Length: 473
Image (cartoon, rainbow, N blue to C red; front, top):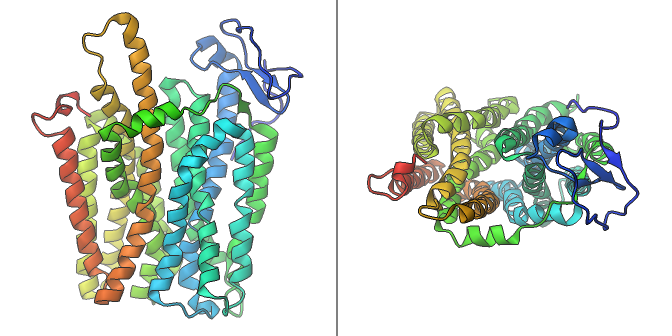
């Protein structure tokens, strides 16, 4: 990742301790003022002069390091998705159900950690928490490198170590929260989109790299899957320590989460996000094992393409949603996911690898487009549902600010709830395989769920007569 080196122009350094604050209001347009420990005291990105004279440069530097750290978080989160299919070659004899548990549990832990990780940034500082959260990635990577060397390692120990990888899933929430504090409203969408897409690519990268790295002349050295991450984790921690900043004005906005939790649209969108982002994480985790079990003659090195096309199609979903509305694109994405799952069912019936692989690529593209579109719906839905009709001008600005904060809270809640789909999909495949000896029942259930989600999206946001239909959400 390109990181601008050297001190930031027009950033003044003081000797105040991080806990102290200035009671004197800064002059309009004043450059960022930094305290000891890389704490920035004055930060006003909405001021054009401030943004031009140093603010934009500081924000950009923090963004790219954040992208790198989040990229590694997703990579560690997805590490077991590509390790599990290789366990048999390393001498492990786990059942299919146990394999899917090892794939699913990191998503369960990662989803659970997303809310506390969001509040960690205001509590500890964005730079400080980035250092801590990145260094925490050493725990699951080193642990993995140890346990995979002994095929006699009990399944319970393996499951615990796999659960540790969930800390990588929490990184997304803290990274997004941190970057949102640095950028003005008009540029937050682009910055957060880059941050999210860069993180998602970590899944594809680790699924590409691990099969190449673990190969040895006599077999496989599975411990390399964990060891290869250590230099990158240490590099990210150093870059965060050397170049990132903490913002004194960043505060944990519990009220925004409370306001979002009381709004029914938060839970509707969270339900939809299970189908889009949850499907992306779930299929990304399960795809290598599905390929290994269904088509053992095929090299696992191609499994990364699913996560790759799902990651790069996410911005496309947001772009199209900006033009035609997020609800319409989300409905189309669910339709595409249903078609992809149906194609996979047909391919399993004829044991045809090409159609199976192509159907899953369609699934991944649809999940990526759905991710971008559903995320775009959040501010639009809250703006439309909280429209201040008939409100006096002096109250309208404060009302709109409350609406924006509630939308931000919805983003945090939906991101956490949606990630639980990464647990549900692998477990769905496992149960289907145990009860029916086939993946087909699970795929039919997924198709039914996507149909329900599409109908909910239409009924709430597109149906003629619905309260938000005219808003073009």
